[in-house]
View (spheres, protein in one colour):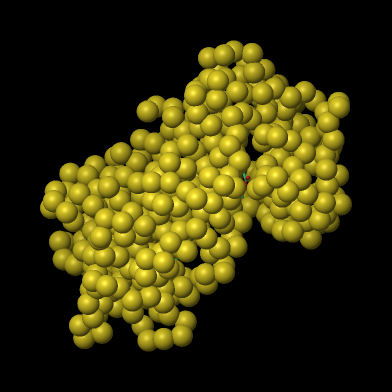
Length: 405
Ligand code: RFL
Ligand code: PHB
C-alpha cells in the first residue's frame, strides 16, 4: 500500500484525479503515464502482487509498445533481455516459410514476457511512491454519468473499505472486471465470436528449438513454438474447447508438439514443464469505450484470440491514447482528446480483430470440416502468403502493428 503526495482524505473519502482499476499492463502503463505528468492517481488491484507478476500471458511486443515502455523509463531490462525478432516462420505441409517482417516493413517485434513488463512497471510505481493497493477489489463505481465526480469503492483484504472520489475512473480491469458490469448491458454493444477450440500452453525449461517463432498448420491442429528467453521455451497446441488438462501428461504434450511441428532436418528439444494451462479463444469488442467519466481500456473493452499476438499491444495502444488525452485534459482543460478516445482506439482494435481472426482461421483445424474443404482453403491461403510479396507484406505489417497507420 502506498501514500499519495497530492491526494487528500476528508471524512474517509480519498480524493484523487484518476482512479485506475486493475494492475495489468493497461492499468500499470496508464498509472506510469499519469505519474510522469504529475497527475494524481490511485491504482486498485483485486489480486496479490505475486499473482500479477507471475500470471503467464503475452510474449510479443510490437515496436510501438517497446517504444512506449522506453519512453516511460521501463526499457532497461527490456533492452538488455528482450529478444528482437525480424521474422516469423509459417510451417505447413512439413516445410517452413519465413516471413521477413524486417525486410518487408522495416520493423521488428520483441520477445519479452508480460510477466516482466508487469514486474518492471510495479517496481517503477513503488519507486515513485504512488498508491497501488493489491488484494483490493473495486466493488462499486458510482456517479460516473451526469457530470458529477465518480466514486470507486474498494475492499482491501486486510483493512477498512476505501472510498475514492476522482475526476475520472479508468476500468483497466480485464475481461472479467467490474467496469463493464457497472455500465450495464443496455449501455454497451457487444460484438463477439467464439471459436470451437482452445490453446494448451506450456512453459518449459529448455532452450528454444528455433531462433524465431513458428506458427504451424497441421492436419491434427495448430501448434506454436514461442519462447521467453534463450533458455526458456513457450509452446502451444490447439486442443478441443472442452479438453481437460489432466488428459495431457507432459509426455503427451511433447509427443503431440513433435508430431505437428515435424520437419525434415529439424528436431524439437524437450525439457521440464514449468507451467501448463488451457486458454479459451474469443474475439470480443464492447463499445463505446467511454461512459461519462468512466473509461474502459485494454481487455476490459476488447479481446482477441492470441494467434495474432495483439492483446497486450492493444492494451498499450489504448492507454497511450487515453494517457495523452488525460494529460491534455488536466493540464489545459481541453477535452478533445478524451472525446476522441473511443473512436481512435476502436479503429486500431478492429484492424487487430480482423488480423487475429484471419490468423486464427488460417491456422487452426476447423472441427466439422469433414470433407477437408476448409483445410484446402487454409493451405491455399498459406501458399499465397508465402509466395506473394504483397500478401506477405500485408501479414507482416499487421504482425508488427503498422497496418492502417
Ligand atoms: P489484464 O492483464 O487482464 O489485467 C486486468 C487486471 O485487473 C484486475 N481486476 C481488478 N482489479 C480491481 N478490482 C476489480 N474488480 C478487478 N477485476 C479485475 C485483474 O486482477 C488484473 O490484474 O488486462 P489488461 O491490462 O487489459 O492487459 C491485457 C493483456 O493481459 C492481454 O490482452 C494479453 O495477455 C493477451 N495475450 C497476448 N497479447 C499480446 O499482445 N501478445 C501475445 O503474444 C499474447 N499472448 C495473450 C497471449 C493472452 C493469453 N491468455 C492467457 C489469454 C497468450 C495467452 C495464452
Ligand atoms: C507467447 O509467446 O506467449 C505468444 C507468442 C505469439 C503468439 C501468442 C503467444 O501469437
